[in-house]
Amino acid sequence: AQTVTQSQPEMSVQEAETVTLSCTYDTSESNYYLFWYKQPPSRQMILVIRQEAYKQQNATENRFSVNFQKAAKSFSLKISDSQLGDTAMYFCAFTGNQFYFGTGTSLTVIP
Amino acid sequence: KAGVTQTPRYLIKTRGQQVTLSCSPISGHRSVSWYQQTPGQGLQFLFEYFSETQRNKGNFPGRFSGRQFSNSRSEMNVSTLELGDSALYLCASSLALAVGEQFFGPGTRLTVL
Image 1 (cartoon, each protein chain N blue to C red):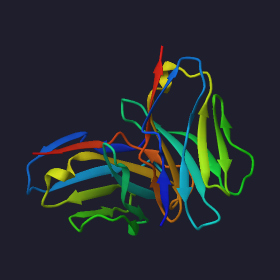
Image 2: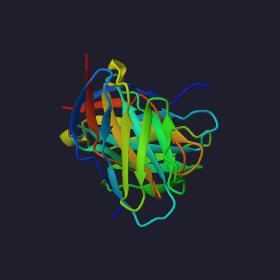
Image 3: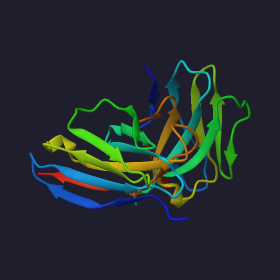
Image 4: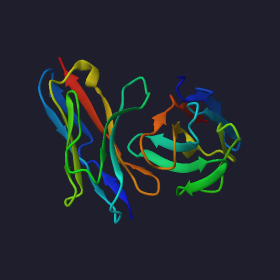
């Protein structure tokens, strides 16, 4: 079975600090994509960052970076210099024959 | 380029009724996926359509159905509504099947009384 696990239902971080959200997945496929999506309180889901499984280099997008460990099937998201606008639900996802999403981590940035 | 649109945004129904939700993908996108989002459950995959054909289906009862039109617009239908069907229903579009990025709509909030 293909699954995505986010073991941290809620997290908080002080503004300007760094926080890491965890994600593990299980798949037998060798080629797939991994994603982190953000869903702010307004509910529009938007893509934060994407990683192709065949690439060894970790993806980065400004303050967002991932630590992709393919053998361990781990895909964590690091947010540096946290801002109030980062407060949201964060979903980890990967594509097998369809998209699989985790249950989400609710991140609160504290001023 | 316009984003994914979903109508209606809010809907209140009673048990036993049926409902149809609509999704218009981003122009040029041929894949449309539907998800049910409830607190604590994350996003549960309902189905994915590509070129008017259902290509993947999640683990939902037959009361949940969908279709895609030639212009890639998609509709989702839920018959014989149950209280547990209350959720946010999200539609996402992408260029191709289950690869690359999905672009999400704002969702339809369905409340079943």
